[in-house]
Figure 1 (cartoon, rainbow, N blue to C red):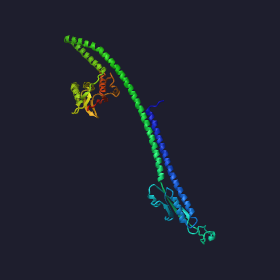
Figure 2: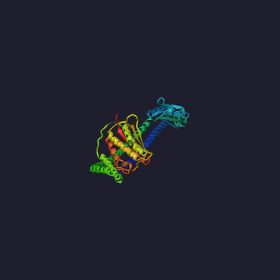
Figure 3: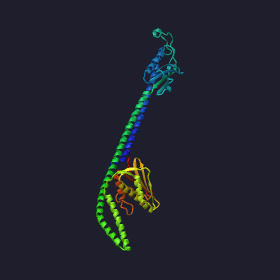
Length: 434
């Protein structure tokens, strides 16, 4: 079963989030392992040093020299900044380390680990023989000539200052690897999201192209049908109207003359419809020339203001004083604007307002026809540009379709928006003439 792209995005996001969480868990474990390894190394070195000190002070008189040698050996470790042996009262017995890295000042230094180990060690005078034993003098190889004294245990402290920078470099490397891996996962998820979005856009574009092709084919069929019917009806209709006009003129005043006048009116209405069909069927290339939209709108307002006033509708013009120039066919754009304004007037009732607004916006010349009439139902809004679709009694449904074709021929965009009870706005955007 093929899942839509919108549903495929959900597991993609979940997978990316799971991988990032896994990387975070592994990183936390790695950092903890580095911390434990550092602590264990420092403790092991500390215990080893204490054992070595206990061993070297057990025998012989040169205890200080032996302890100093042990501390010097420990201080050779690259991670040991300083090491010191203190007595129970905190006095330094022996110390080794880099200058400025003394144990006392280690707490104020960043990135160091200061460890203190308290222990007891037999430390005192004498030759180092066991307590209660008698020294054998030269015969025993000692030469002290005195009885061995018992050496009491002394409390000592071993202070080890450990450099944490190598471990911090390891931690920084682990964090960098985690961030890089998370970035790769996020980038892969982003690429996947863009691919899914591209698939969705391609599907929408394919549906749109198919719909436009279907509409274009239907439109061409309707154009051929309209043209054929108009041409077939036009000549007989002209003859019928001519004879009816003659009969009307010869008829005496009264009922016969009134009926002939009614027939003439209906014939004129049919002729208007035929002209609309022919205009719909004809493909007219616009003759582009510099055109002032404000002046064009003023002409349309002057033509239709009497019709609007007769219905109690206020027709207004909102245009700047300076010209708003574009390139267009004056006759075709005037026809478009007349269609839009007549539709707006017919959608209004007494007391409503129709405004034709002209302005320059975002580098384009824009003309909008706004009314405060009944508005458009949401279900009807997507169909307003379809041929023969109309919600007005007696309407042909070709006005907006013809207007859209004129806009497309000018490389312009015609947009409509409205809601029931809130009026309608139809906007035409044309490339501006520099």
